[in-house]
Image (cartoon, rainbow, N blue to C red; front, side, top):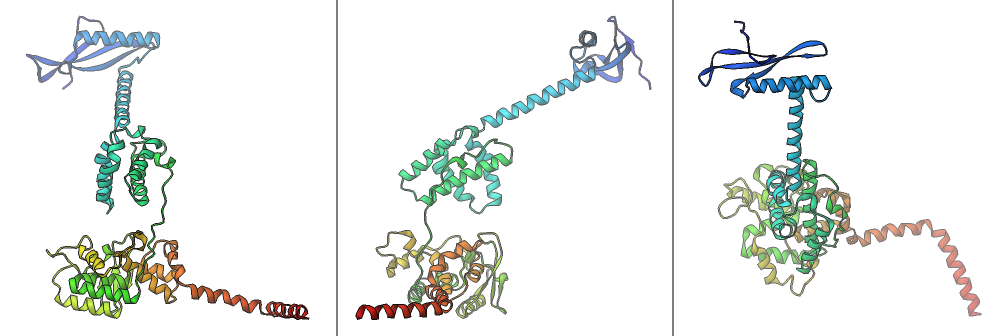
Length: 411
Protein backbone atom coordinates (compact mmCIF):
# COMPACT_ATOMS: atom_id res chain seq x y z
CA UNK A 1 0.00 0.00 0.00
CA UNK A 2 1.57 3.36 -1.00
CA UNK A 3 2.41 5.73 1.83
CA UNK A 4 0.53 8.97 2.30
CA UNK A 5 2.85 11.91 2.84
CA UNK A 6 1.71 14.77 5.05
CA UNK A 7 3.04 18.32 5.00
CA UNK A 8 4.21 20.18 8.09
CA UNK A 9 4.16 23.85 9.02
CA UNK A 10 7.90 23.91 8.25
CA UNK A 11 8.84 24.51 4.63
CA UNK A 12 10.53 21.55 2.95
CA UNK A 13 9.69 19.05 5.69
CA UNK A 14 7.08 16.31 5.43
CA UNK A 15 6.36 12.88 6.94
CA UNK A 16 4.24 9.77 6.72
CA UNK A 17 2.85 7.62 9.52
CA UNK A 18 3.53 3.94 10.17
CA UNK A 19 0.36 1.91 9.76
CA UNK A 20 0.66 -0.05 13.01
CA UNK A 21 3.71 1.03 15.01
CA UNK A 22 3.26 3.63 17.74
CA UNK A 23 5.68 6.16 19.15
CA UNK A 24 4.16 7.01 22.49
CA UNK A 25 0.43 7.40 21.96
CA UNK A 26 0.80 8.58 18.34
CA UNK A 27 1.72 6.66 15.20
CA UNK A 28 5.44 6.57 14.47
CA UNK A 29 6.40 9.21 11.88
CA UNK A 30 9.00 9.01 9.15
CA UNK A 31 10.48 12.43 8.24
CA UNK A 32 11.92 13.58 4.93
CA UNK A 33 13.26 16.90 3.64
CA UNK A 34 13.24 18.63 0.25
CA UNK A 35 15.68 21.29 -0.96
CA UNK A 36 17.37 22.74 -4.03
CA UNK A 37 20.85 21.61 -5.14
CA UNK A 38 22.54 22.45 -8.43
CA UNK A 39 19.27 23.80 -9.81
CA UNK A 40 17.29 20.63 -9.14
CA UNK A 41 14.98 19.56 -6.39
CA UNK A 42 16.31 16.95 -3.96
CA UNK A 43 14.48 14.88 -1.37
CA UNK A 44 16.06 12.69 1.26
CA UNK A 45 14.63 10.56 4.03
CA UNK A 46 15.84 11.31 7.55
CA UNK A 47 14.38 8.66 9.84
CA UNK A 48 11.66 7.78 12.31
CA UNK A 49 10.44 9.69 15.28
CA UNK A 50 11.19 6.57 17.33
CA UNK A 51 14.84 7.05 16.26
CA UNK A 52 14.85 10.60 17.62
CA UNK A 53 13.80 12.64 14.60
CA UNK A 54 11.42 15.61 15.07
CA UNK A 55 10.18 18.45 12.89
CA UNK A 56 12.67 20.76 14.56
CA UNK A 57 15.63 18.48 13.86
CA UNK A 58 14.41 18.01 10.31
CA UNK A 59 14.34 21.79 9.79
CA UNK A 60 17.87 22.12 11.22
CA UNK A 61 19.24 19.35 9.02
CA UNK A 62 17.57 20.89 5.92
CA UNK A 63 19.10 24.29 6.75
CA UNK A 64 22.51 22.68 7.19
CA UNK A 65 22.38 20.86 3.85
CA UNK A 66 20.97 23.92 2.04
CA UNK A 67 23.81 26.07 3.35
CA UNK A 68 26.39 23.48 2.30
CA UNK A 69 24.88 23.32 -1.20
CA UNK A 70 25.05 27.11 -1.43
CA UNK A 71 28.56 27.62 -0.03
CA UNK A 72 30.20 24.36 -1.09
CA UNK A 73 31.43 23.76 2.46
CA UNK A 74 30.64 20.41 4.06
CA UNK A 75 28.32 17.62 2.86
CA UNK A 76 25.44 18.86 0.73
CA UNK A 77 23.49 15.61 0.79
CA UNK A 78 22.38 13.42 3.62
CA UNK A 79 24.18 10.45 2.04
CA UNK A 80 27.43 12.41 2.06
CA UNK A 81 26.79 13.46 5.63
CA UNK A 82 26.24 9.87 6.70
CA UNK A 83 29.36 8.70 4.87
CA UNK A 84 31.37 11.45 6.54
CA UNK A 85 29.94 10.51 9.91
CA UNK A 86 30.78 6.87 9.28
CA UNK A 87 34.34 7.75 8.31
CA UNK A 88 34.73 9.88 11.45
CA UNK A 89 33.45 7.04 13.58
CA UNK A 90 35.80 4.56 11.93
CA UNK A 91 38.68 6.94 12.45
CA UNK A 92 37.73 7.31 16.10
CA UNK A 93 37.65 3.52 16.43
CA UNK A 94 41.04 3.21 14.75
CA UNK A 95 42.50 5.86 17.02
CA UNK A 96 40.95 4.20 20.05
CA UNK A 97 42.45 0.87 18.98
CA UNK A 98 45.84 2.48 18.39
CA UNK A 99 45.72 4.19 21.78
CA UNK A 100 44.92 0.82 23.32
CA UNK A 101 47.91 -0.73 21.55
CA UNK A 102 50.19 2.14 22.56
CA UNK A 103 49.27 1.69 26.22
CA UNK A 104 49.45 -2.13 26.13
CA UNK A 105 52.06 -3.31 28.61
CA UNK A 106 54.48 -6.13 27.98
CA UNK A 107 52.85 -8.15 30.76
CA UNK A 108 49.36 -7.68 29.31
CA UNK A 109 50.49 -8.69 25.84
CA UNK A 110 52.43 -11.69 27.17
CA UNK A 111 49.48 -13.09 29.15
CA UNK A 112 46.67 -12.15 26.77
CA UNK A 113 48.25 -12.77 23.37
CA UNK A 114 51.62 -14.47 23.50
CA UNK A 115 51.06 -17.25 26.06
CA UNK A 116 47.98 -18.74 24.32
CA UNK A 117 50.07 -18.86 21.14
CA UNK A 118 53.02 -20.41 23.00
CA UNK A 119 50.85 -23.05 24.67
CA UNK A 120 49.45 -24.12 21.32
CA UNK A 121 52.74 -24.16 19.42
CA UNK A 122 55.63 -24.74 21.81
CA UNK A 123 56.75 -27.45 24.18
CA UNK A 124 58.74 -24.90 26.15
CA UNK A 125 55.80 -22.68 27.16
CA UNK A 126 56.12 -23.59 30.86
CA UNK A 127 59.79 -22.55 30.88
CA UNK A 128 58.89 -19.30 29.11
CA UNK A 129 56.22 -18.54 31.69
CA UNK A 130 58.58 -19.24 34.60
CA UNK A 131 61.45 -17.17 33.20
CA UNK A 132 59.12 -14.31 32.29
CA UNK A 133 57.78 -14.17 35.85
CA UNK A 134 61.27 -14.45 37.36
CA UNK A 135 63.33 -12.04 35.25
CA UNK A 136 61.26 -10.12 32.70
CA UNK A 137 58.13 -9.14 34.62
CA UNK A 138 59.89 -7.39 37.55
CA UNK A 139 62.02 -5.27 35.21
CA UNK A 140 59.89 -4.37 32.20
CA UNK A 141 56.55 -6.14 32.64
CA UNK A 142 54.60 -2.95 33.34
CA UNK A 143 56.21 -0.93 30.55
CA UNK A 144 54.23 -0.34 27.33
CA UNK A 145 55.67 -2.40 24.49
CA UNK A 146 56.84 0.68 22.62
CA UNK A 147 58.73 1.93 25.69
CA UNK A 148 60.99 -1.14 26.05
CA UNK A 149 64.51 -0.31 24.92
CA UNK A 150 68.01 -1.72 24.79
CA UNK A 151 68.82 -0.10 28.15
CA UNK A 152 66.11 -2.12 29.90
CA UNK A 153 67.40 -5.35 28.37
CA UNK A 154 70.96 -4.59 29.41
CA UNK A 155 69.65 -4.15 32.95
CA UNK A 156 68.11 -7.62 32.81
CA UNK A 157 71.44 -9.03 31.61
CA UNK A 158 73.22 -7.37 34.54
CA UNK A 159 70.67 -8.58 37.10
CA UNK A 160 71.03 -12.14 35.92
CA UNK A 161 74.80 -11.95 35.81
CA UNK A 162 74.94 -10.49 39.33
CA UNK A 163 72.69 -13.34 40.47
CA UNK A 164 75.25 -15.81 39.14
CA UNK A 165 73.11 -17.10 36.30
CA UNK A 166 74.78 -19.00 33.47
CA UNK A 167 75.43 -17.25 30.18
CA UNK A 168 73.12 -19.68 28.45
CA UNK A 169 70.27 -18.75 30.82
CA UNK A 170 70.76 -15.05 30.07
CA UNK A 171 70.71 -15.74 26.34
CA UNK A 172 67.54 -17.80 26.74
CA UNK A 173 65.71 -14.97 28.53
CA UNK A 174 66.73 -12.51 25.81
CA UNK A 175 65.56 -15.01 23.20
CA UNK A 176 62.14 -15.14 24.87
CA UNK A 177 61.90 -11.34 24.77
CA UNK A 178 62.88 -11.36 21.10
CA UNK A 179 60.17 -13.93 20.32
CA UNK A 180 57.56 -11.90 22.22
CA UNK A 181 58.32 -8.79 20.18
CA UNK A 182 58.45 -10.73 16.93
CA UNK A 183 54.99 -12.10 17.64
CA UNK A 184 53.73 -8.64 18.64
CA UNK A 185 55.03 -7.24 15.37
CA UNK A 186 53.52 -10.05 13.28
CA UNK A 187 50.12 -9.59 14.94
CA UNK A 188 50.04 -5.81 14.60
CA UNK A 189 50.55 -4.94 18.28
CA UNK A 190 54.02 -3.47 17.78
CA UNK A 191 55.73 -1.38 15.16
CA UNK A 192 59.39 -0.71 14.83
CA UNK A 193 62.61 -2.60 15.37
CA UNK A 194 62.81 -5.46 17.84
CA UNK A 195 64.67 -4.01 20.87
CA UNK A 196 66.66 -7.23 21.29
CA UNK A 197 68.32 -6.65 17.92
CA UNK A 198 70.35 -3.84 19.52
CA UNK A 199 71.57 -6.02 22.39
CA UNK A 200 74.77 -8.03 22.22
CA UNK A 201 73.78 -11.61 22.91
CA UNK A 202 76.00 -13.37 25.47
CA UNK A 203 77.74 -16.45 24.16
CA UNK A 204 79.27 -19.36 26.01
CA UNK A 205 80.69 -22.72 25.11
CA UNK A 206 78.20 -25.06 26.77
CA UNK A 207 78.99 -28.07 24.63
CA UNK A 208 79.49 -31.13 26.76
CA UNK A 209 82.91 -32.71 26.37
CA UNK A 210 82.46 -35.72 28.63
CA UNK A 211 81.63 -39.11 27.24
CA UNK A 212 81.83 -42.49 28.89
CA UNK A 213 84.31 -45.24 28.23
CA UNK A 214 82.83 -48.72 27.67
CA UNK A 215 83.97 -49.65 31.19
CA UNK A 216 82.31 -46.58 32.73
CA UNK A 217 79.11 -47.24 30.81
CA UNK A 218 79.00 -50.79 32.09
CA UNK A 219 79.57 -49.62 35.66
CA UNK A 220 76.76 -47.08 35.35
CA UNK A 221 74.30 -49.55 33.84
CA UNK A 222 75.02 -52.18 36.49
CA UNK A 223 74.44 -49.72 39.31
CA UNK A 224 71.28 -48.37 37.71
CA UNK A 225 69.90 -51.88 37.42
CA UNK A 226 70.41 -52.47 41.15
CA UNK A 227 68.42 -49.33 41.98
CA UNK A 228 65.77 -49.38 39.23
CA UNK A 229 65.46 -51.91 36.36
CA UNK A 230 63.33 -49.43 34.37
CA UNK A 231 65.90 -46.65 34.80
CA UNK A 232 68.55 -49.09 33.60
CA UNK A 233 66.51 -49.85 30.48
CA UNK A 234 65.91 -46.13 29.80
CA UNK A 235 69.63 -45.43 30.07
CA UNK A 236 70.52 -48.42 27.89
CA UNK A 237 68.16 -47.23 25.15
CA UNK A 238 69.67 -43.74 25.14
CA UNK A 239 73.23 -45.09 25.21
CA UNK A 240 72.76 -47.56 22.36
CA UNK A 241 70.33 -45.59 20.15
CA UNK A 242 71.26 -41.96 20.84
CA UNK A 243 67.78 -40.93 21.99
CA UNK A 244 67.14 -37.78 24.01
CA UNK A 245 65.35 -38.22 27.34
CA UNK A 246 62.12 -36.77 25.93
CA UNK A 247 62.29 -39.08 22.92
CA UNK A 248 62.65 -42.08 25.22
CA UNK A 249 59.66 -41.00 27.33
CA UNK A 250 57.51 -40.42 24.19
CA UNK A 251 58.29 -43.87 22.82
CA UNK A 252 55.14 -45.97 22.38
CA UNK A 253 54.84 -49.59 21.27
CA UNK A 254 53.11 -48.73 18.01
CA UNK A 255 56.25 -47.04 16.60
CA UNK A 256 58.55 -49.98 17.32
CA UNK A 257 59.27 -52.31 14.40
CA UNK A 258 60.60 -55.49 16.01
CA UNK A 259 60.83 -57.34 12.68
CA UNK A 260 63.28 -54.83 11.21
CA UNK A 261 64.60 -53.69 14.62
CA UNK A 262 63.71 -50.04 14.02
CA UNK A 263 62.44 -47.26 16.26
CA UNK A 264 60.42 -44.50 14.58
CA UNK A 265 61.18 -41.41 16.66
CA UNK A 266 58.43 -38.78 16.57
CA UNK A 267 57.97 -35.41 18.27
CA UNK A 268 61.70 -34.74 18.16
CA UNK A 269 63.42 -31.53 19.21
CA UNK A 270 63.66 -30.25 15.63
CA UNK A 271 60.17 -31.50 14.76
CA UNK A 272 61.35 -34.12 12.23
CA UNK A 273 60.65 -37.84 12.45
CA UNK A 274 63.72 -40.03 12.21
CA UNK A 275 64.62 -43.71 12.50
CA UNK A 276 66.79 -45.22 15.24
CA UNK A 277 68.20 -48.72 15.22
CA UNK A 278 68.26 -51.41 17.90
CA UNK A 279 71.44 -53.04 19.08
CA UNK A 280 71.14 -56.67 20.08
CA UNK A 281 70.83 -55.85 23.76
CA UNK A 282 68.25 -53.12 23.10
CA UNK A 283 66.22 -55.58 21.03
CA UNK A 284 66.28 -58.14 23.85
CA UNK A 285 65.41 -55.50 26.46
CA UNK A 286 62.43 -54.13 24.49
CA UNK A 287 61.18 -57.60 23.60
CA UNK A 288 61.19 -58.54 27.28
CA UNK A 289 59.37 -55.34 28.28
CA UNK A 290 56.81 -55.82 25.51
CA UNK A 291 55.75 -59.21 26.88
CA UNK A 292 54.99 -57.74 30.31
CA UNK A 293 53.60 -54.36 29.18
CA UNK A 294 49.93 -53.40 29.39
CA UNK A 295 50.36 -49.70 28.62
CA UNK A 296 50.66 -47.53 25.50
CA UNK A 297 54.09 -46.19 26.40
CA UNK A 298 57.23 -48.29 26.67
CA UNK A 299 58.21 -46.58 29.94
CA UNK A 300 55.68 -45.24 32.43
CA UNK A 301 55.52 -43.58 35.81
CA UNK A 302 54.04 -45.27 38.87
CA UNK A 303 50.50 -44.41 37.82
CA UNK A 304 50.97 -45.84 34.33
CA UNK A 305 51.24 -42.45 32.64
CA UNK A 306 53.99 -40.97 30.49
CA UNK A 307 57.20 -39.98 32.28
CA UNK A 308 58.00 -36.27 32.10
CA UNK A 309 61.53 -36.08 33.55
CA UNK A 310 64.59 -38.17 34.38
CA UNK A 311 64.31 -39.81 37.79
CA UNK A 312 66.40 -38.33 40.59
CA UNK A 313 67.70 -41.86 41.14
CA UNK A 314 69.95 -41.31 38.12
CA UNK A 315 71.75 -38.46 39.91
CA UNK A 316 71.97 -40.51 43.11
CA UNK A 317 73.63 -43.39 41.28
CA UNK A 318 76.14 -41.00 39.68
CA UNK A 319 76.94 -39.72 43.15
CA UNK A 320 77.33 -43.23 44.53
CA UNK A 321 79.86 -44.28 41.89
CA UNK A 322 81.67 -40.92 42.06
CA UNK A 323 81.62 -40.01 38.36
CA UNK A 324 81.27 -36.29 39.10
CA UNK A 325 83.41 -36.13 42.23
CA UNK A 326 85.61 -33.03 42.15
CA UNK A 327 84.20 -31.87 38.79
CA UNK A 328 83.18 -28.20 38.78
CA UNK A 329 82.78 -27.50 35.04
CA UNK A 330 79.31 -28.54 33.90
CA UNK A 331 80.70 -29.49 30.51
CA UNK A 332 82.71 -32.25 32.16
CA UNK A 333 79.93 -33.61 34.36
CA UNK A 334 78.11 -36.83 33.61
CA UNK A 335 74.37 -36.27 33.18
CA UNK A 336 71.65 -38.22 31.40
CA UNK A 337 72.45 -36.42 28.12
CA UNK A 338 76.00 -37.83 28.40
CA UNK A 339 74.54 -41.17 27.27
CA UNK A 340 73.44 -39.66 23.94
CA UNK A 341 76.80 -37.87 23.68
CA UNK A 342 78.57 -41.18 24.30
CA UNK A 343 76.55 -42.89 21.55
CA UNK A 344 77.84 -40.35 19.00
CA UNK A 345 81.39 -40.38 20.39
CA UNK A 346 81.71 -44.15 20.12
CA UNK A 347 80.47 -44.13 16.53
CA UNK A 348 82.99 -41.49 15.50
CA UNK A 349 85.81 -43.31 17.29
CA UNK A 350 84.95 -46.38 15.24
CA UNK A 351 85.33 -44.42 12.02
CA UNK A 352 81.67 -43.73 11.21
CA UNK A 353 81.37 -40.67 8.95
CA UNK A 354 80.05 -37.49 10.55
CA UNK A 355 77.21 -37.27 8.01
CA UNK A 356 75.93 -40.68 9.11
CA UNK A 357 76.26 -39.72 12.77
CA UNK A 358 74.30 -36.53 12.04
CA UNK A 359 71.40 -38.56 10.66
CA UNK A 360 71.42 -41.01 13.57
CA UNK A 361 71.50 -38.18 16.10
CA UNK A 362 68.78 -36.18 14.35
CA UNK A 363 70.95 -33.06 14.14
CA UNK A 364 69.44 -30.43 11.85
CA UNK A 365 72.89 -29.06 10.94
CA UNK A 366 76.22 -30.81 10.40
CA UNK A 367 77.89 -28.17 12.58
CA UNK A 368 76.17 -29.75 15.58
CA UNK A 369 77.86 -33.04 14.78
CA UNK A 370 81.29 -31.58 14.03
CA UNK A 371 81.98 -31.28 17.76
CA UNK A 372 82.88 -34.98 17.61
CA UNK A 373 85.46 -34.57 14.86
CA UNK A 374 88.31 -34.32 17.39
CA UNK A 375 87.70 -37.97 18.25
CA UNK A 376 89.12 -39.13 14.90
CA UNK A 377 92.84 -38.19 15.17
CA UNK A 378 94.07 -41.44 13.61
CA UNK A 379 91.67 -41.08 10.72
CA UNK A 380 92.88 -37.52 10.07
CA UNK A 381 96.50 -38.54 10.51
CA UNK A 382 96.09 -41.25 7.88
CA UNK A 383 94.46 -38.71 5.55
CA UNK A 384 97.36 -36.26 5.82
CA UNK A 385 99.90 -39.07 5.38
CA UNK A 386 98.58 -39.52 1.86
CA UNK A 387 100.45 -36.33 0.97
CA UNK A 388 103.72 -38.21 1.48
CA UNK A 389 102.93 -40.25 -1.63
CA UNK A 390 102.57 -37.06 -3.67
CA UNK A 391 105.77 -35.54 -2.29
CA UNK A 392 107.85 -38.75 -2.32
CA UNK A 393 110.22 -37.69 -5.16
CA UNK A 394 110.73 -34.25 -3.64
CA UNK A 395 111.38 -35.81 -0.24
CA UNK A 396 114.06 -38.12 -1.70
CA UNK A 397 115.89 -35.12 -3.21
CA UNK A 398 115.79 -33.30 0.10
CA UNK A 399 117.18 -36.36 1.87
CA UNK A 400 120.04 -36.61 -0.64
CA UNK A 401 120.96 -32.94 -0.21
CA UNK A 402 120.71 -33.19 3.55
CA UNK A 403 123.09 -36.18 3.65
CA UNK A 404 125.52 -34.41 1.29
CA UNK A 405 125.69 -31.38 3.56
CA UNK A 406 126.30 -33.57 6.59
CA UNK A 407 129.23 -35.22 4.71
CA UNK A 408 130.82 -31.85 3.95
CA UNK A 409 130.56 -30.71 7.52
CA UNK A 410 132.12 -33.95 8.77
CA UNK A 411 135.22 -33.43 6.56
